[in-house]
Image (cartoon, rainbow, N blue to C red; front, side):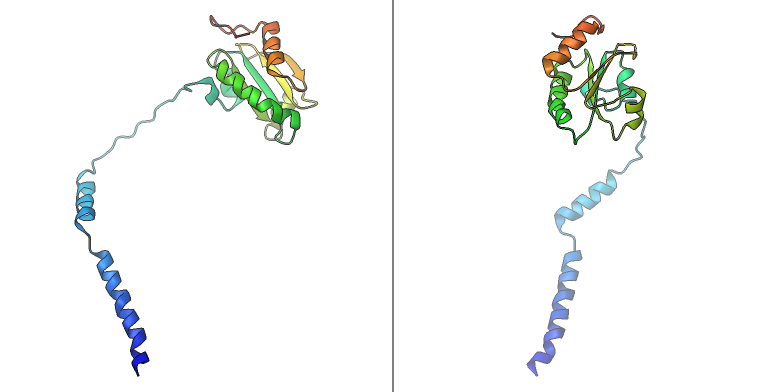
Length: 165
């Protein structure tokens, strides 16, 4: 007979918890009042954001509009030499920030660029001048020294600062 009241006791306990859980305490009650009191109409305006740094650039079109030389590495995440070049591209992007744009794009996600610049093997590096015109193309792995030498040999004008050699 004692067991017949067990489900009823459980239901009463659950109902008690639900009622107690819905009673606001002082902190929540105060927060609810202030959040309602602070609601005012907010005017949202669109802000045109300019890239703060050339390292933030993610597309070739955006890079070519900067007025800086662009060094584009076309490769893949499955290609060992391409993977080995990625840290070099990132390092140069940090060192040459504001002087040149170093960009690495995947050929499988950008097939149109691979076709446009005649990529036959990867990695392929395409060098653009500050006017966005392609000046040279190099195929195969290039270390940091080779990349900087190629940029210097092409004499890509980068404004007053020039590229570090």
